[in-house]
Length: 99
Image (cartoon, rainbow, N blue to C red; front, top):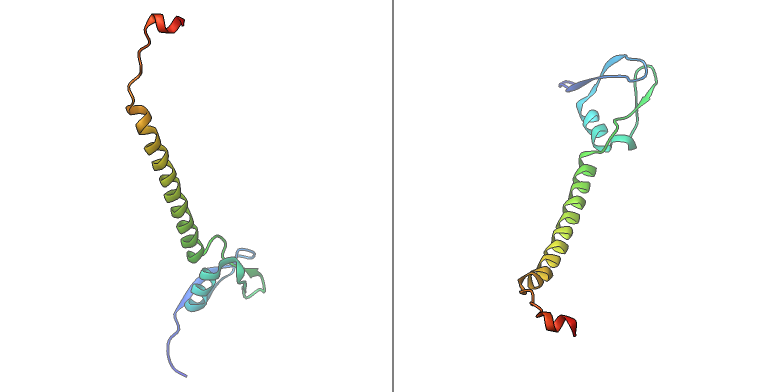
């Protein structure tokens, strides 16, 4: 079997051994993050931590949707406040105030 395999150098967080894994495996581990474990040559289990790109994108879409909803609510409040602010204050004559 001939060919080349791209490798990515990694370091075990438990024992510090430096070794290489196929780049395709590394990409898969990065995508799945904490849901997929692998092992160093000394049998220590490890995985990437944090959110995957898919999880980050999903969270960003949720945040954008929430911000859009907040903007719509503020726009509604502003639309209701404008007519009130446009009204001129009514002056009360002193004789009306005592009645």
